[in-house]
Every structure is written in C-alpha cells, then in structure tokens.
Length: 369
Ligand SMILES: Cc1cc2nc3c(=O)[nH]c(=O)nc-3n(C[C@H](O)[C@H](O)[C@H](O)COP(=O)(O)O)c2cc1C
Image (tube, rainbow, N blue to C red; front, side, top):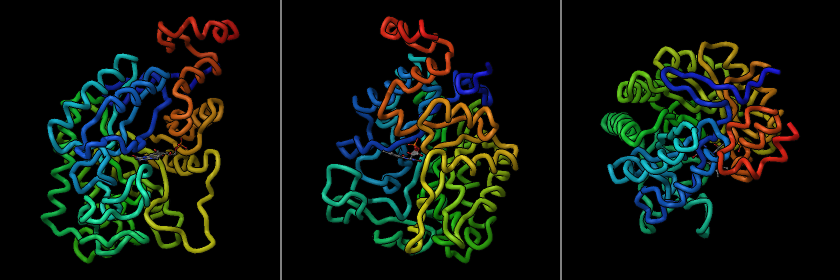
C-alpha cells in the first residue's frame, strides 16, 4: 500500500523524511522578555522531532521587538537570540527532522498579554505595563485592542529589512527552511485584507497593492537565504467574512507567491477580524483542508493543510486524495508528542522512524504490524 504521510518530500535542496509537520505554536516562554530561547524550547521542539515529525516549525518569532504578540515571544532581531536557537536546531536535527522557523510581525495585534500567566490574556498590554505602540496598515484597531499607528514608507522599509535580517540569522542558526507569517490577522495579513487596509497609497487599494508588502518581504527573504533553501508562506486563505480577503484573492496571491520563489504555502484561515454577530467559523475535523485543496488544484505551488487533522488515517486521506502535499499536526502533537511514531505504526510504516533508544518500548506494536 502506498504510504503518503510517511514518504519524503523534497523542496529545493531539502528532503524532509515525511509529510507530518508540526506547525508554529507560540509558547510565550521567553520569560525574561528578551526573545531568547530557553531550555523549555529545547525540550519542546526536540520532543516533536523525537516523536517522528518530518519538520518542526518554531513558533512565531518576532523580527522586531514591536512585532511580538506578547513580550514572552521568541525574537530574531539580535545575535543572542540566534545563538540560543542553534541548540534547538541541532537537537531537532539529531532526531532526523528538519527545522523551520516562522518569522513574524504581529502588527496591530502586537503588545498583548500572553495566553497564560496574566490576568487578561489577549488584551492589549499598556505601555506603562511593558507594552508598546503598535503599527498596522491603517489606524484601525483589531476588535477591542488598542488602535495602531499607520506605517509610513520608512516604517514599511524597516519591516522588510527586519524580515531579511531575521532570515539571515535563521540561516546562521542552522534552520533548513524559513516560513513567513502572513496569516491570522498579523501585519502582513492586515495589509492583504480590505477590512484592515484602508491605505490610499501603493500599499492599499486593489489586491496588487495590498499584496505589495508581502511580496516585498518574500523577495527580501528569498534574497537573504541560500538558493537551495525552501521558503514557505502561511496565509489565511479566507477570513470567513463577506468583503474580506477570500479564497479567490488567495488563489491569485498564491500564484504570485510561486512566481516570487515561494516553495510551499501553508493554508490556514481567519484571525483578522471577529465575525459578524451570529456567524461562526465552521470549525471541525479538517475544516480548512478544502481551502488547501482549492489552492493546490488551481496553482503550481505545493500546499500544506492544517487544522484538526488529528488522526493518522485522516491525515493520510488528505494526502492520498491529492488535497495537500504535507499535513501539519499542531495541538494533537502537543497532547501526544509521539504522534509521528504512533502514526508510523498505525500506518504500518517504516519502524526506522523510532529512535533506537525507544524501540524496545514499541516492540509489541512493531510485532502487531
Ligand atoms: C498554543 C498555540 C499557539 C499557536 N501559535 C501559532 C503561531 O505562533 N503561529 C501560527 O501561524 N499559528 C499558531 N497557532 C495555530 C497553529 O499553528 C495551527 O494552525 C492550529 O493550532 C490548527 O492546527 P491543529 O488543529 O493541528 O492544532 C497556534 C495554535 C496553538 C494551539
């Protein structure tokens, strides 16, 4: 039987051992608020690699201090942050997985209280409490967060430069691939969406204008990393809101991304504005997969699917039916850090994926296969 989930995939010069990838997930664990990875990150990312992931993508990492969602986010705007990520990359490699990092700027959704350990998770963090002034395409707030300042040309140039500089540091830290975060209502998505981008200059208006910043970032990052290194972009393929950034625009955008040297698009959704009263995102198993399938069918760019793909056979089905090239498993991998090993056994794949130190513990399951 063909096994898709466990088969390798090659993007440029990188061959990843399987198609089970762990998506970026913020941990808010740079507790010294300096953006520097700690032992927690070493253990956390290492465990996914030990547990059979093909690629492990490190969480949204701020390219600038003001680009962090919360002060406890990782950063990559200085060399101390780069150096602290090297052992994380080395540990992931030691278990045979590829290491990626998501470079991010949170735009108008920056400067918030982290998801845990504070009284008002997700609320704006005031400057007096260690927060900062946020920036966006326009001076329009996200929901109840503090309104941002609209970026001027110089501010836009600084963002592009910061993505490129962070990409150079990612390469120096040993990462195998770089992902640009253009989803979930953060800065690059804010520019893409007519709901948050009301600019009248060349960065607003029609899709070509709204996509200009993302394409500049992609060009700058592509130019900063080796030719053989894959570049991934994560998008929200729809905002699930009438008049927002939608699948049709996403299809055009992905075509452009391919032309600009992007090797894979990860297809997520939502996050840029709350839905109108009474409307809900149709969250459920595989609910974003049709978006990935749509883009894969209409563009030349490989795609990864993500979102409640919690079961190995479900993930296998997504690949076997040609809906995506890679499946990302997030929360399920956090609940069960051996998700990849279990999937390999469930699909009766190659037991080689099990680290030799762990094989004795899996003996019964191996016999069953
Ligand atoms: C704790 C947590 C943190 C997350 N942080 C990020 C992030 O840093 N960047 C991002 O693009 N998505 C982030 N996400 C979204 C996940 O990458 C993923 O798309 C989402 O959890 C759906 O996949 P799943 O159902 O397999 O968990 C986060 C999700 C969780 C649960």
